[in-house]
Image (cartoon, rainbow, N blue to C red; front, side, top):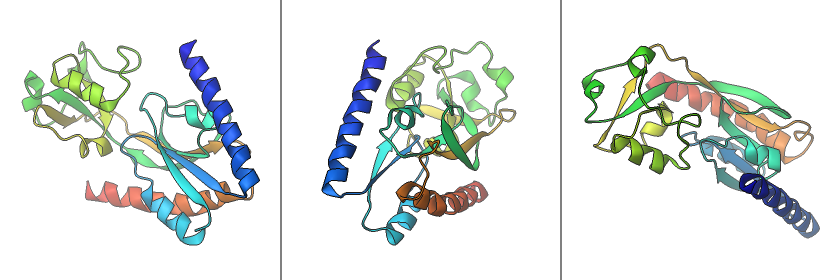
Length: 213
């Protein structure tokens, strides 16, 4: 009930703010993004063509990717699957591998890679086993020996610490990244213009990072 009340409050607050912006003649675009994904390339391309539109960014909690698109807090999301795409239009951008995050003291941490079978029986910190509300909380629990996690490789550069190890999981399938907007919300205007510029910019950036890795 608490989470539902939070969503209702956010939806009402967003609607009121958009009414105020419309009355002031302002145009604003809110772009949400999942941890580790970089949306700056798309924003630069958009603002160069549309400097009159104010662009805000909304960092997403890793376990609640789609909520701001469903409750109206964001116009566009740069997300990783899986998420609830009901009522959303999605545009594929690329694919990203996941790696296993382990405490450096864990016996398999000395290996160069793992398979999913190597993680059988391990306490995995995810929404099914144990929900963590921030990445800092997740990595602190892993370092303390409370579990392991599979995380997107793009996150590892921002969370490099001596008590954690990231290892490739050779048989774990990559996850799809995509842009998402509410269905019907990409009519003429800033959202459609953003998509037209963001899709090629983000695809090129994703391909460049994949080539470097």
